[in-house]
Image (tube, rainbow, N blue to C red; front, side, top):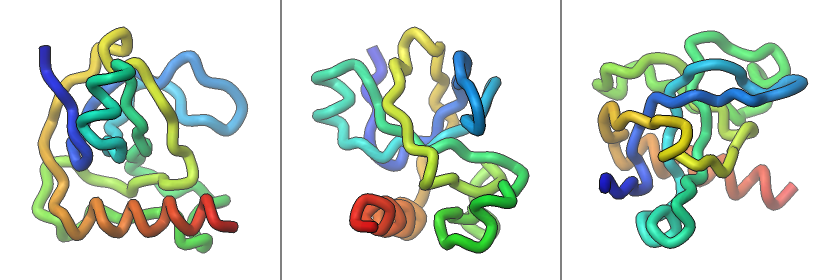
Length: 115
């Protein structure tokens, strides 16, 4: 079985979702470490969207992938972190984000949790 690690970019199904949550198939960045992902068979992820949510545009909670040298394009929505069963949601591993992107996302998550 594939073991996910922090920094992996996946493509998976976010449904079921409701309200302002992202719906449908999306890319996402795994932010939980390998030990968590293995132990619980879950992964903490932040969705990636090609668009920019107006509610997040000026808040500092989007991390753009532009210029990161990745196939995946868009912005990481750190304000929509989710714990998902990546096996049931049929996640496929796409690529790995560079450390500077992962660190930027983790900094955003700390600021979300500290507010």
